[in-house]
Image: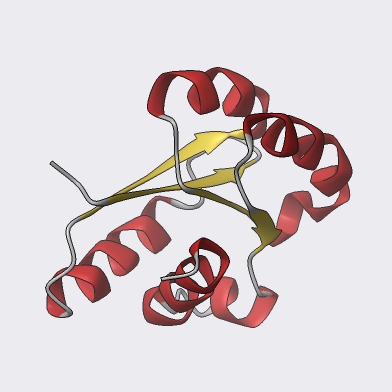
Length: 106
């Protein structure tokens, strides 16, 4: 069973799939068993209830939705932030993983 669950949210949940794969590789290389998945911003509330993630990372292309998503994550007691645009654009899974871990206090 995964020790931590990281949810990435973007417009359709598809553009983050490569980043999820890169984050999973980085976590595995560090010996960490994390459940990392992507979803659409419209499904954030449902996934918060279903998967109970430890952190939510918002894609930079939907940063304009930060306050709306933060309302859901705050209500669930889950930290949330927007993924760094350069890390996202370059698919730097290791950097995004570090950002998620910082938010989780790991």
